[in-house]
Length: 276
Image (cartoon, rainbow, N blue to C red):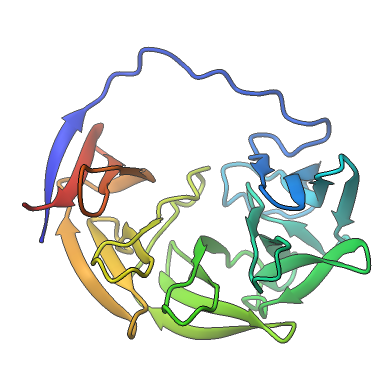
């Protein structure tokens, strides 16, 4: 079982923020890589999409990729879409030694989709997209990238409409296309109008050697630990004394799975760890 305890925090300083690259999306994260991609970031701020799910109505019109040799390429969207996201995610989805990039692409008239960007013939481009959600403003939030089944395939976990539906879906990229392979209900990893898009974390919580996902329930009153191996299931559920309102953090323990830290609506910090 998992048990909870509460810790109050007082901020004593503000961490220095590195200067973003010229033209970068305000408050966006510059993602660093270890393989052929050195850095990637969202750029060309635009107000052409009237949504504001991430706290303002400024989204990205392009993605900039800086490779290990210092060269830059830009993947620029047409006027019918934006990157409605804060951070590109780097992962070797097909295990060929080269990173792909996963980002949320939102169409002005058809809503959000999941997009995979990869290098083709020396040029980075969008090589796969999940079907958009169908109408303006429905949004999805990636929850993590890992081998969630233990079968060797890298999957992309996302939450479809984390504010009203909360479906945790597992997608895989095979043969140049994205396909949904599993889903679980009752998960939220974002609060509408905030920049906190990481209200989910990955770790092996049940000791089977396979990545699990922890995230709040749709009403944010509980933390749920779920797995897709050997089938979609809940490992544990922990009631919270107040609603979760922050990104999740993992705290290393001396043995066993990490503890889970989350800020609550009453101003306290909850730390959940496995009972001894």
